[in-house]
Length: 130
Image (cartoon, rainbow, N blue to C red):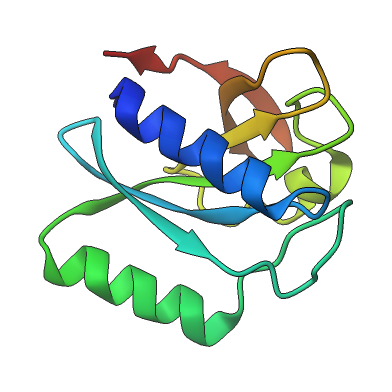
């Protein structure tokens, strides 16, 4: 997925503002390029997992569809661990065509990575920052 530095900075800002709980949201795309970040509320309010409220998720997905965009990615943060999908993340990856973006805040600098998760298998997905 291609993504602008401005949108990456928006993800990092969201992660920092919600810490120590995980942030979460969705990224709309067009032709493989991220075009808009939709912040969501972590209904779990947890530093260990995220959950987007069903009504909020539906509203965001309808906004994306109404704008004639695609659901390009679902994102969240890991505030204490490296940005790699946990077993919970893998178990709850219900959108095989979306990239799962994780913002890691555990190191000296934020680390943003993308993954494809299909049938319980994790594969790193390139994030081309433009």
